[in-house]
Length: 273
Ligand code: SF4
Ligand code: FES
Image (cartoon, rainbow, N blue to C red; front, side):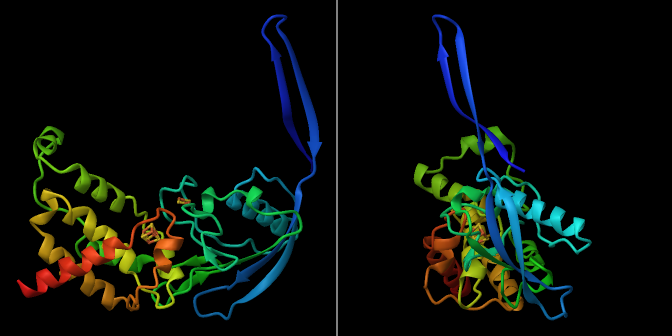
């Protein structure tokens, strides 16, 4: 299959003449080395595939889609991978690409990564997120319900905060509202855990605690929230933070490690009160 691309469009308003040149460009050949694992307790291994005619304009997940079509045609099992929104919102699509969670681009989820990031003939190694608290379910799919349980332990406001006009009537500094908004951008993808040599979930938990701790509405339940969420995090078997900042470097929403400092302050203040 070759790809048709409009590579130049010359419009002349005066004579209303439109000249469209169409050029044929060949797709890329990509070598894939993909982690295949039948189930949680099965042993996994890498399998190699060659995918031809990959358009540079395809998303990474579209490239996996055509790989799966190719596997199905050959009577083989397709590669299991998680995805939903394909817009960088839902946080389900994370995989490790060439050793980096969500791949080589800063601030980009796997679904928003495009094949133009790679070159014809490249070899791409794709693995699931690796952490004890995120067991592999099949191929590239991991169980991230540990994050749900942490969230359920306190990542919410149960007091009545009123309606939108009420919220607008509460004075909040621009600085705090910006910081709260940025913390709320965390999509719960788990890349911070995958990037951390200790499999620490501190960046995720700190974002969830910070988005409330910075706002007056979040302060009412602040003490219980931070104590319960940190206890839930410890119960799930995530490791400790040793300040390598690998989490911030690979977070697709570029959540700042300054949230971890805030989480520690909130935690010790709650413990001592
Ligand atoms: S902090 Fe970043 S890497 Fe971690 S879960 Fe949130 S968005 Fe994903
Ligand atoms: S599929 Fe939703 S963030 Fe990638």
